[in-house]
Length: 438
Image (cartoon, rainbow, N blue to C red; front, side, top):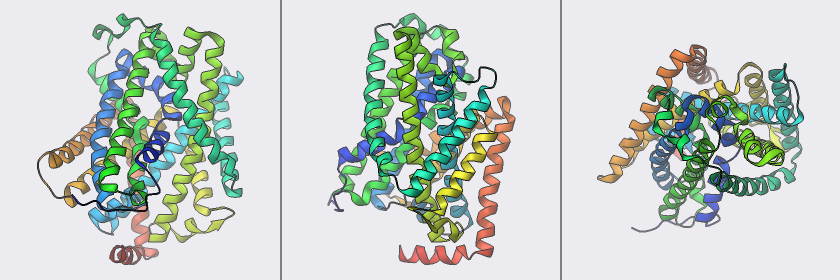
């Protein structure tokens, strides 16, 4: 097959580094314990299933990225698949909401880790967590407005340091492992394991950023799929190995009751106070750098949506070294941080991401031709995401009806907002012009 060439500014290794850096960070530090509270000693299996769903969906993203190389990513694929209109516009806004949820989750994780490190609020822990989370959002938003370059530089260093730390931590824990703790007899009911997918999948959602690099690759047809599969594969192996090591090195009570600080608790149990504090500091740095990346992503999305008319033009107005979209996104994330819990936010983020990814997968089925394994892989990606959503909806409706209601309200908000923008801001005309010239 003839290779189409791009700018060549991003190599396969560079794209892998970008993807792994977007996936491995605050999520795994916070979500391992939250997922273990549901899946118990089978939490590694939950990560494995979530990773397989990510691999299947990554195939669709890689193929769409080759066909439509664009930094617009998901937004571009939705418009290409469904055309400009209420449906693709509402889904794009829902994707933006998913980014806001991710920012709120990262901020709440920071609040938990920082409060634990500082020994704050044994009785008023939620207050301190939300206060610290809010302070982080405000502080990083201010830094982005003045254009502090050192944050971006530090981000790359922290990602590399955290990868090394988690790898060493996993190897270290393996020397303390008790394989009996992994026995099938210790697993909870299948419904609990599957119910935890709403948390474990969220730790994989950053892989979509790899497809955005297609137009900057020398040979995207060859390089993008390699980068996508390698990225998800590396993260999948790390997550499953870490989950196995954690499960085998701590008692069942600590595994299911430590929550977001599970990794730090396990570090203290096996390596003493030094291990405990190192894990907490690492987790705090991971949340800071991840949230900074979240601000960058949300600002890019709001700028693109405002340019296409899918959000009001004020989202794209320049403020300092950024745009008004950053300040609006920060304000919306603050609302979520102060009214939702970490578990709820992570569950909602996973559900909204799964829904959008399902639509992208179905869009790949409509847009991409071919037969054999190519079609089977796309079909499997559709089925896997839809089944995960059904499992999440059934489990959440039973165990947390409030979270289920919030998810439905996000759907309504996304499409009502899009309908109002079409009617009062001429979004449909702007989108049609974009469609014809893209």
